[in-house]
Image 1: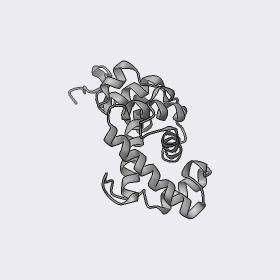
Image 2: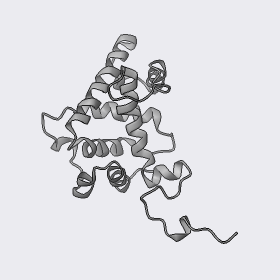
Image 3: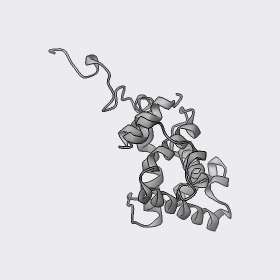
Image 4: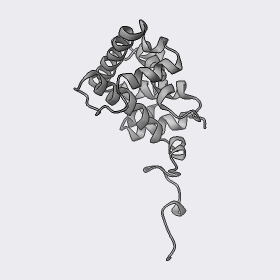
Amino acid sequence: MELTRRDVLAALAAAGAAGAAGAGALTLSERGDDDPVGDHEVATLVAVADVVYPSAVDGVESFVEQYSVGRFEDRPEYAAGVADAVAALDEYTQHWDDADFVALDADARESTLSGMQVDTAEPAPDGADRERVRYYLVNELLYALFSTPTGGKLAGIENPQGHPGGTASYQRGPQ
């Protein structure tokens, strides 16, 4: 299933970034130099998405880049949290693999997230490294995916909340 620009806008609207969704998200090259989420952080988000998104999803890189730029545009504190979580993930992979997370192959990325115990960590913005990685990277990306019509179909939800689907999607007969 292909993630489209429409999915990006739906995810941004669901995340409360309506201004970015309505005006159209900036591209990576249009961001300011003082933005804490730069090319490396976005590339890391794409690499995490490649691990946590189902293999049936196409267009991940474009979706994550556009979503990230729009999501963090007016939220500098949140963007700083994402940058810190990326730094914590890179520090972990530097310790074990002598490389940043984005430089690892797909299998190594998956085992890194598993070894860091991100899959069982309680998401917490001010928690330990694995909790911040879970909160700012993994949960953010999963929320973005599954708040879209395409992601909803993958999860068996034909009509995610907030997306119109007609009366047949919510009405039942008098059984």
